[in-house]
Image (cartoon, rainbow, N blue to C red; front, side):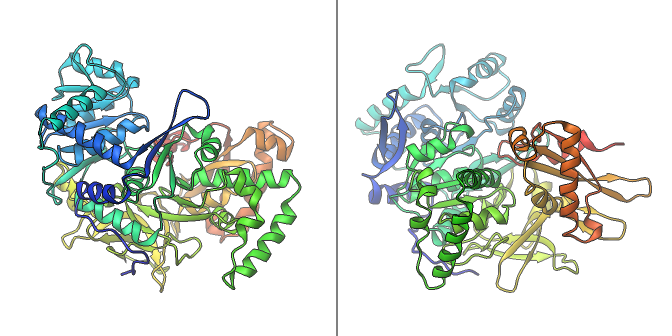
Amino acid sequence: MREPIHKVMKFTDIKDMLIKSGEKFGDKPAYILKTEETGKFKEITHKEVREEINNLGTKLINMGLKNKRIAVISENRYEWGIAYLATVAGTGVIVPLDKALPDNEIENLIIRSEVEAIFYSSKYNNIMNEIKEKKTTNVKFFISMDLETKENDIYSQKELTEEGKKLLEDGNREFIDSKINNEEMGVMLFTSGTTAMSKAVMLSHKNICANIMDIAAVLKVDENDRFLSFLPLHHTFECTTGFLYPISKGSCIAFCEGIRHIADNIKEYQISVMVSVPILFESMYKKVMKGIEKKGKLETVKKGIKISNFLLKFGIDIRKKIFKEVHENLGGKARLFVAGGAALDSEAEKGFNELGFNLKQGYGLTETSPVIATEDDKYRRLGSIGKALPSLDVKIVDENEEGIGELVAKGPSIMLGYYKNDEATKETIDKDGWLHTGDLAKIDKDGYIFISGRKKFVIVLKNGKNIYPEELENLVNKIEGVSESFVYGQPEDDGDYKICAKIVYDIELVKEVYGTTDKNELKNILWQEVKKVNKTMPAYKYIREITITDKELIKTTTQKIKRFEEIKTVVKN
């Protein structure tokens, strides 16, 4: 097991976390929000956040929602966090729903989760009114995040919070004094996929708190840090690492206004920490390097990197000074980036770190609350996802001759199971308590974990060799002008597979780099580049055919390629 490298505040459940961190960081800002006036911001302290949680939680219990399930669905915003915490820290079970689901799937998940109340933003007014009229669910309370007062049986979150405040002032302590059983389900999360396929993951307070404490033991964050919340809050990676973790550390959270506004938001909010998916950091890195090249400063930066790397060997870090302009372009405060959800390109990781930004790769699953492993403040190995967190054990099962097999994990952050699905639970967690991740990996002698790809996506050739699509995609994505790619096996008449790639190009970039946007010309140019990639690999891994497009790949809300959907668009029967 890995040793913690930072001191950690201990807590038993989310309520305990809120109390202890609130006592320590009460006067520090917990949220920074934009106001209607340009350039003016509103700060909400940790003390104010906890008061609002207590007010709303008191009212929810007063409405008869003690030990009930309550859903929340909206864009990332302050009210989402309050609804989540007012439910989970003393009322009942919170059910965060994917904000990008179509209406019929939202309805199906509300039915499946048996929720009796739902918090939502005005974007979902139509579907909520429809559900309310159809009466196909258990929902008794529809709660709007945007209404000022109750309208047509739709409750106002703001008004309920005020009513809870009055109840508290009158001596109602039901929420304040409520006890948490940290081993029971506190959160129900649906895995991505269609409604029929998605599984409801049951997480306890113990699961989530073990993960938060583990992260705190290996990554240093404090009350002076500001997080930019970008990934959807319903997703457990963002929820644990970009919401609950900063709240536990007295940090401040700002909300990103969308992918096009990331650079501006990092600057104007003076962001120091950001948790996101690799594709975002890779895109940021490409833009940073393109900007340096356009200014004719590439050679100067390369020399600066050589000098700073040499000095780092002696513990002298001058990266922020040498690359001051790059840092100022990202607000001047950015210091820690954490990537998760897919494999991070080692070039972007190495590049950002050489420029003085601490970019780390993590790995996890919804079923593990979610983080299993991450690089830390002391140890890193390029290309790895770091080591397992302090409270977790990991190992490889069913290894092949290359030492690659399925990664399994065991520890206090492993889920309770899938709701009403014992069969799927038994398939995922074996009788000895090991959770089977479905990911193929190898672990080196020092405990660093290297992910090869998803077990179910491996292409097995007739000669028994395994092709990991993610490995090839990583190489293809480095070709200039390529924004993303999808590698797959095209079935052949002899029962083998031909390795193919669907390549998505960036129109503006290819025009700039190759001087053309003609599809036939581009295909030929990119094919020559793919041939160069082939030469760096054994022949059995060669990509034999490509298709190109400027339309982005089909993805989940957390930017993972929906491989089973993509395969339908490319494989010929």
